[in-house]
Image (tube, rainbow, N blue to C red; front, side, top):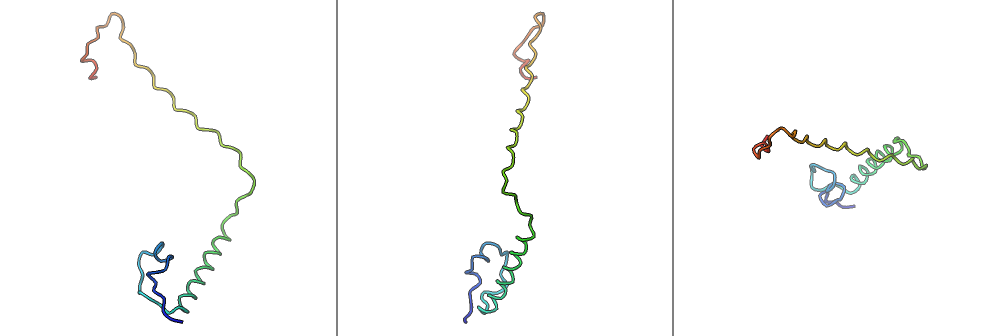
Length: 86
């Protein structure tokens, strides 16, 4: 078997921050990939399985309380436009 350009492999394009070398012997690469595959499979087996039962629907979130309306000025109170800046 010949060498394989590591920079051309999708697994390295997606997940590698750096590649230490441009190519590697195909047999060596297959052995490393198989070991990695076994690690991924073991991690999947160790993860808790999800139940096939349907979960009950979650209640929708309660709406936020409405803002209290601003108090109207009392009838004996004068209202001026500069009060808008307060």
